Amino acid sequence: MTKPPHRGGSGRSRTGPGASPSGRPPRARTGPRNTARDAAERAAGLVVSNRAPFGRDRSDAAPWERDEAPARAPAGATAAKPASSRPASSKSPSSKSLSSKPRAERPRSGPPTEGPARGPSEDRPPRRPRREERPETDGAPRTRRAAGTGEPEGRTRSPEAKPPTRRALREATAEALATGVQTLEVTADEAGMRIDRFLSARFPQLPFTRIQSLVRKGELRVNGKRAKAADRVEPGASVRVPPLSLEARPPAPNSPRAEGDLAFLRSLILYEDQDMMVLNKPFGLAVQGGSGTTRHVDGLLEAMRDKDGQKPRLVHRLDKDTAGCLIIAKTRLAAATLAKTFRSRAARKIYWALAAGVPKVRQGRISTYLAKEEVGDADARMRVAKHGDEGASHALTYYALVDQAGQKLAWLSLKPVTGRTHQLRAHAAHIGHPLVGDPKYFDIENWELPGGIQNRLHLLARRIVIPHPRTAKPVDVTAPLPPHMVQSWNLLGFDAARYDPIVEAPEA
Figure 1 (cartoon, helix red, strand yellow):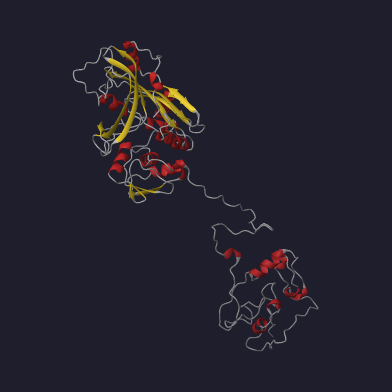
Figure 2 (cartoon, helix red, strand yellow; figure 1 turned 45 degrees about the vertical axis):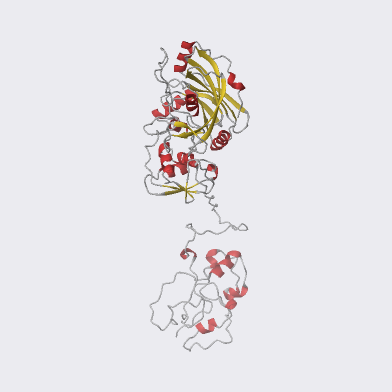
């Protein structure tokens, strides 16, 4: 005689005598098959008396006791039969009777016992996958959440993704070597920069002449429009850059070359604080790279990069053969502030020069329009132009005669109000007194250089007074005479401590 299936079981076994008549092979048991709702209620400690078999509340039992129900009912225990159950001799002996029970009355725990399988026509929800079978959505294993917090136990929130550092941004930009057209996005701290300075900061190995060539040929676009060198970028702007061919990387920090460059720059410092410094640029050292120029101040500043990758920045320029005060910004904020100071003409500059001949007017004002003789050439000769000429810009300079050597040479002190290319050299030549040693603008025929004076440009950025970028207090720095000018001053008997009357000249 076949033993009827136990009513306390799950009724899902297919291996007993009441298995499905489909002839499927018996399947190995792997333990209780409970729903996710059962697991949640057991974890929460809920007590449902009519769900525990044989009238026993098992919510407070040990885990191994909860999952393992007795195979038999204890003596004297009787399982309640539903009123609508059919005799065991029907084709579906107990599966239909189980399905006809209310959901709350069906047994939820206990090991599966031998019994008939559910038929395909029965209406039941699909089995939810077990915890170990559920797919992971965040790439990390699911863990139980701590009570009262909603946070997983033993798991900490991943920190928010940090924006890339300036160094990472610069290195990523520099790695794009000849890979095709690039599109750069202007960050907030780059706002207000000239487009050529923006590219120079992003591509420190790119020669400045190459940047000017890109702008001149229209290969550089900002938000889809052609850009000019003087245009300033705004945050979020899209800058289209054509394929580039960059020079070799600068020397790595702590290399012998970098240490030598750093020591050289340190020897030039006239003033320094946390925001800016003033260098005494020597004669013959270019400020920026160009065709055939491999050693320049901008390249030497690579040796001063800090741990965050920030490099000191140029805020104005001097001609290669002009010596004297050159201001360097140590932070991006200082660079932007100092650049605005130069644009607003709030910086006061005084130059010393040795000119051929002696002006008849001891103090005067030179006001002209200047334009390049060859448009597009960064180092082209400047010519005096008329108002309205293409590329003509107004240039204003005050001068004063400090001392003279007969009628042969004059020591001039110059105060430029504007800052045009070659302004002082072109103005001196315009009034008939070109500067000694100027290869571009010295045009006096049959003029002989006095003995003992070197044929080098005698022009010095002697003094600069500028508001500090952070405190707005004036920073007043004076540069000494370069060696070749010291030699000339000694030969001509000029006293560098003599009163300079240019300080009385107007500021605008």
